Length: 286
Image (cartoon, rainbow, N blue to C red):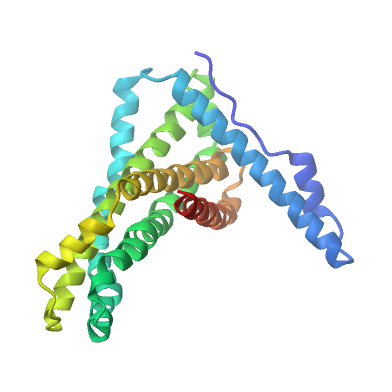
């Protein structure tokens, strides 16, 4: 069976950057860091393209094996995190929604409540908080599991018996995490909006539930549903691709797995923030 080759990082250039003398000027330091950034983006981009090509080329191949793996990853990045996200929704509803309702009620501007909730919770906090928690809980597991498997030679063993490691190890994680982040984002948003009104009710805010949910329905547009779905799925796929890249794309020793995990977390967070900024531009342009 033909297997996709995992693209190694450009070892010669990267080793030169690591072993080069201490930079003697600020411009040299900035240039070196920029060059390392470009190498990392190049490696992650190539890895993502190979993963996408493998997903399309081998769609339907090994369904009896791949589908249970996707369900397992979806459960790990979704169902198993529901208790934690329910607690987070209560806190978010109290800290953001309940306080906002109280503040707008004091100003006599409760008619703006729906728009504020959509902008703050639906568009921004919901997807970003979900991506951050899934990254901390499941993204680290990806790097540790795959990095350890690579260090122990298990990935090479899969290739030796004709199993594509991208198809078997990466594709289920990308698809499963995208589905998991999307589901958790919807759960967090809905639970936060409901718990927010509960906290406002406990504060005796004179806002009937019908008016509250009517304002939310008016403020929500078709673009909000589409963008939230795309944004959350993109966050999940990005986190899975970057963490799998750091676990598989270069040979690791066991003592290097922790460093690769930190790099994967930082780069995944930056990628999610940049993606979120692009979606904000989309809102502004539409």
